[in-house]
Image (cartoon, rainbow, N blue to C red; front, side, top):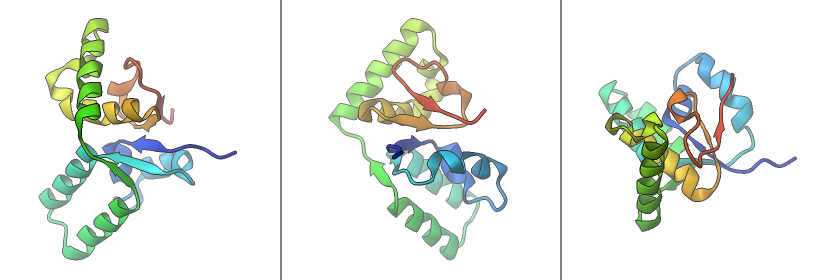
Length: 138
């Protein structure tokens, strides 16, 4: 059975760059053979983390090559609209994703909602968010 594309959150995507990561191993079965879609926000977070940790040229090239194999969704009018609608929907139901400290997470969630595909994340903030389908490993 063919499985469709998924938006991959920063926590799961970045785990593959940590040697021996248990998180990466746990999520690999959800990702194998699927098109991985990244939000522009995830790409920014990946690059920030790499620069903060002082990655060398070889590791940065490896990161760039991995990102090049994913579909990266940039912001635009449709994504901005979905982002705002998601924040309002979360606020109306009392979901924590509406809070300011989750602005980055909301961009990632809005990407999945806009595309109508699942989000793969280990971050519990996404559980129960209106209109979002979450795939996680228990």
